[in-house]
Length: 148
Image 1 (cartoon, rainbow, N blue to C red):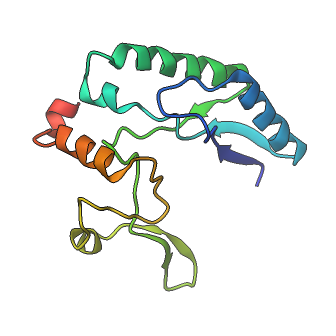
Image 2 (cartoon, rainbow, N blue to C red):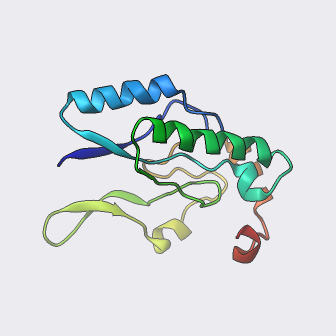
């Protein structure tokens, strides 16, 4: 292993990642003898995904995050455009036949969950139940084409 994929996890979605935090993160990674060339979770704010009038300020912040990442030597930025969840799995420790483990998703398991009170493994529960339900309501009727 020569590098890590990391992020500035304590900055709320839609805000600019402080350049000094990125520099400190790079310093910590380099101090461990590793490289920090890939950043994940520069999350796309829901207002952008929903096409709300407030999206422009979040687009500007996102653009600045790209610039700041470039200033510290990041070569690849990963993001998810998935509505609301960014990503989710139903199991963080799926055991394969060879004994290895990985993240996994089961539609069958997901279908059994209460969609109005979701508790997913490893998922950032940064929304209250009311906020989550409000976001889910905004996406009702959203088609793939409309999201695109």
